[in-house]
Length: 98
Image (cartoon, rainbow, N blue to C red):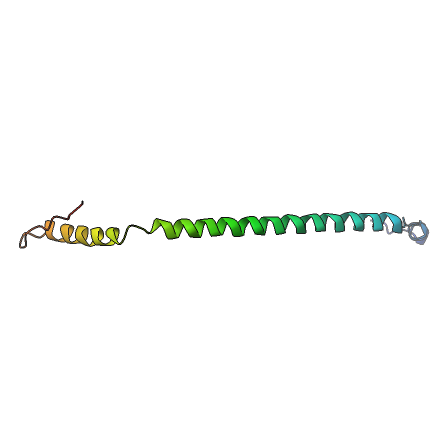
């Protein structure tokens, strides 16, 4: 494969490069800064909304545990039932489901 001559190299290097216009770059930076500010506002609104929803869920969880321990007692009774049901040596303990 032939190597390029020095004239071809000189022609490539002497070609004028495109220069960036500062006004275009400044306009693009301004646009990006505007988008960042919009995203900051959106994030702040989202955080407020998330905090209020978290408070609502915490209130629901606190209100949902109003069974008074009935579930725990029923679970204990059901465990006893299944242990005694399969054991023929002890009478089966039937849970009180009322």
